[in-house]
Length: 124
Image 1 (tube, helix red, strand yellow):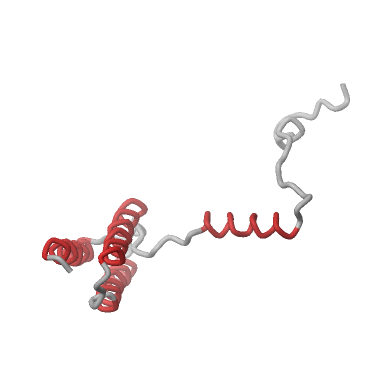
Image 2: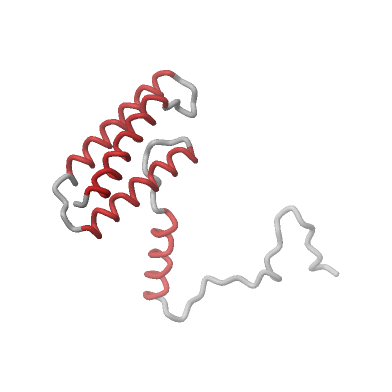
């Protein structure tokens, strides 16, 4: 690990600990804030400890990018937990459905779809 990369990793580690110190749960409840702060600290310690012996620069860069993304997502959504990859799972499910039924489509003709609040003019 280069000295610049080492400094970047240590800077992220310090940033996470400062973030945990200032963290406030979105619910405003003190119990939630304490739990979320503890989660942030435990998650950081666990992941940094797990990855401390990495030597592959590409893998280190990937971990740095993931850490930065989790910090930004956590701050934006005010949740310390990683977001589930719902979109990715949905795409995989649709792909497997298409593979199992190659003749079927899930596309709709939007002209035929009537919103429930709109009156039906089929009687005209």
